[in-house]
Image (cartoon, rainbow, N blue to C red; front, side):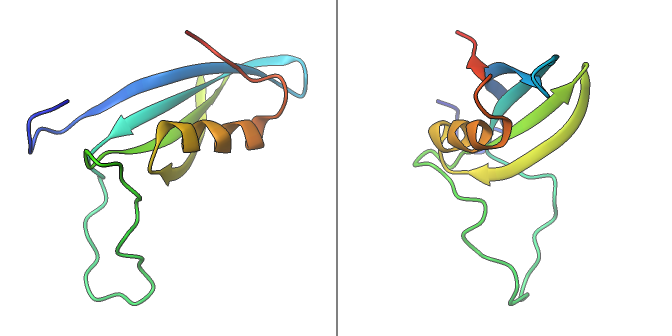
Length: 99
């Protein structure tokens, strides 16, 4: 747990999968409590409950790597389990989570 007001962004889960069944790739799930994006006020298209957060005020997102290069970032999730489920839906059956 972090002190209130302390910014965190850390990898909490790592996994691997085979892109196209052959190219080894990685995925990292990050836990964070802040966004680099500035807040947008009074915009009816912005959901005020996004990103979803856990009880500690943190949210989770996945970063995909192909051959060591960042190739994509997921939406944000309110739990590491939700982020893992979303990654599994994207990359398919060769996904293996590392201890």
